[in-house]
Image 1 (spheres, rainbow, N blue to C red):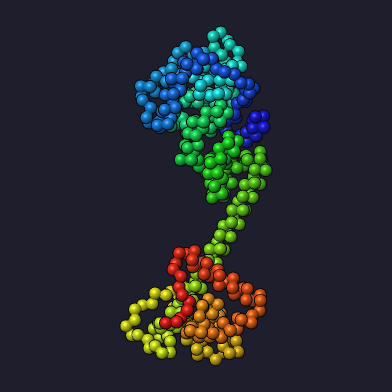
Image 2: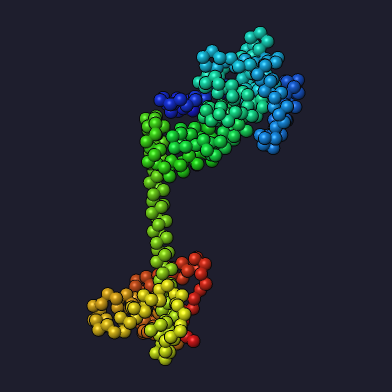
Length: 387
């Protein structure tokens, strides 16, 4: 607890962020049965209202709780806050809603007929909102927005889980923003709120330039240089993951394009497409538009490959590209003897006496192409051009 206090104290040097009050000595005792009986009915009603939602609280019951707190009828506890403020409460309600306060009241000394509890480092009005919530489980929206960070700390220190959950919910649903993201992130780490800390961390990563210009970031840099290094490290890791994701996505896109090219090549050589087709099939004048996206580009490559005089000497880049596509087809073709794709059988025979490293590269490429198409959910296309 001392470590938590020093950390938060450093964190709020230049910010109006609440400092959690110290926990009492952890002693255990059994609450008096009469006191428990007095508060049991009230606590059950609060639990039912929290389960059903705030809007289901009966207005008459809510007014009764509010009056009990405001009028302090037969109050037996006084809470001292900063600036000499006092808030009166009932030990039965406070003890049943907060186990920490129950222990504090057991350890406190009586002054007259009232026990005394001190809550320092938090604005008086924030403490008042906190105690009012213990009575009615209700709050004013404006007060929640103004004191939400104080209430988050108070709910954690005094073990009021339903208020802590409500604070986290309100922050997640609109009260968290660029300006307070760094402060809320640190408090979420200190107050054991993993979901809230994750949401803050994502906001910091996605809006790092704006967050790093806030006052909260500057204070954090001075008070917690280790935390700053950890955040910067996660940003670097996030960038690396994003680049790796982009690289894999581009590779997958390339493999899908290669598979589409193989499909279009089989289509051209088996069925014929416009002016390119098998030697024994004439092109159809009334043929419908081709549905293969790579067909037009392959038609141009095939026409060039058939007429180019430089391909024998290996001096034509387009012919090299076409040769690579034909060799790739031969690696994917399951029946080269019956295949109509040019040079399929020649490349297949050449692959039987391969260079081991080159053959491994071709196998890996062919496997990735087939896998990328299966991952995309497209139907498998037979790469054999037999009729």
